[in-house]
Image (cartoon, rainbow, N blue to C red; front, side):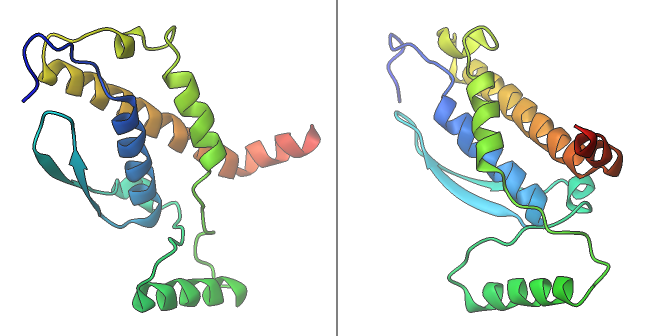
Length: 157
């Protein structure tokens, strides 16, 4: 355990990791299991469960060494090529996510990320809040980009 005299801060790397896992889980509709080791704590296992409301809006392919996953992804691509009416594939936008995290991690946006917390519980609550904000913002932007009216307006620009 971390000594009581050691300051406790929310972990920006953990926030980024958790937000990205949640977005990918939401896009793929698949659970993601992860193992995290925080300094001064035991290793934790977590499962990121996809949001069913988001999952209905599309899926992405994840690079995989598993042949079953690769064939499933190939089947999905074939269906799309043959004019299937399935939802278009979405992909994880690393550049968008990077801009969102840069904004969220700015000291003016979330000064609490740069201030010591009274406890691990407080630090984790802040982490959870910022993760939820990143996921919500990312998904709202992606939905807006996919909206036909937004696409028509963008085409006019």
